[in-house]
Length: 494
Image (cartoon, rainbow, N blue to C red; front, side, top):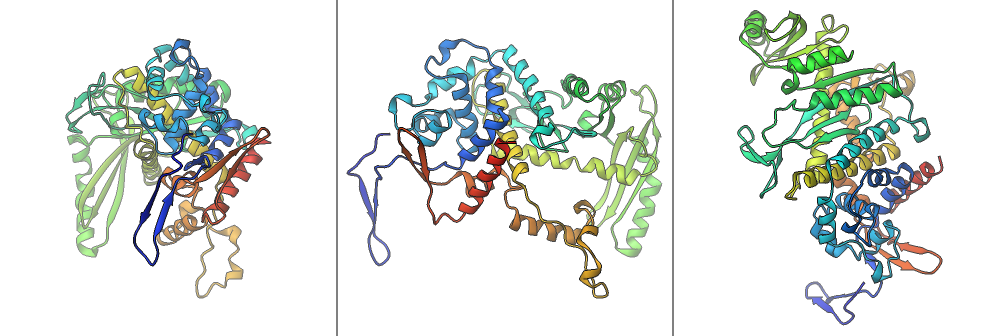
């Protein structure tokens, strides 16, 4: 790395001048990426991603597919979402060490922006199909016993679409009237049990919410059942997916489903009496009211009646009615629990926020649609690396048992504490506040990982025998860094 040796500047405030000089040592501000690289070495996420690519070797004659995938994916983790960022980062000693190159050798710099642009634009439809296969393979591997998991008895697949605003002349970027913007409209399928992105698909800006969802869901189910034939699969999605195509598919493939459904005059008339009853109760008690109605309803486009649950609410903000359609056993017996379980799919929206906002999955600025599709998949790979990392090192405290004035602590063993999901609202909030203090990385978003782990200055010293990364002993998060690194070392030898 070329450094100016004579450069200096002084800030004139305080009781003495503060002088800034340039260090002669190779430095980096992203040393925390090494813990992700260590986990990736075991999981082989970037290796499998690169292995799925077939392309013109002239795109990067001195840079392998794997090197460029790692540049982009680790750059996204460290908040460098643009290709332009790598014109500066190509000489960064940490990024070069991650790629297995000599950090001290200028001849071993990484790919520049033009090379990365050619790389992303070289992708083909066949490449994207292989990457789709690879994502499902990684999802199945995430339950492997050799990686600390166990084969699941059931999984819940959450389907959702999210808007991805575009700026420029990207192919198939179209104006969407509801979102009032030019955009793409990606479809994602996540697993509620392990937060993994099982599949993400880029679609044109005016696509319907369910466009292609039937093909994606069918493919995932066939792949999963080829490994676990007896697994129970539950599909959840909002009303944009509650169409006959998806309902029929789920029933054909023996899936349990809970889909949102839009209110219509028939459902409105059927629940008017219940709504009026709750309004009277609210007027008398001033307490929020919530009840459920459930019956076998058949829409005109349905082939048969289906269990339809309507939630009716009355509170200080007004009235609210929401509908779900389900074939879950017991849905008619426990409609409230069925609806609440459906509402848990809102957690998948947090996954979208991480992918779209924090990992900049909305930064699809290539002109070609296929290049932007490829870029979205790299963002998704970075997200899955984050998920596996935080799940591996998570160490949440156990929910404290409830103690009252007439219930001495020794009479309420911790082993009998309620599960987190069953805690009353106040105790649940207290628990999550305690978890944020005691386990900040276990559920930390990428912004937390960046401030506490990734963004740390380090000196990189290269010798013929080893590469030494020197961190500051006064770094306030040094213990967290060591905890993650040691946990990953355990994973690497599993």
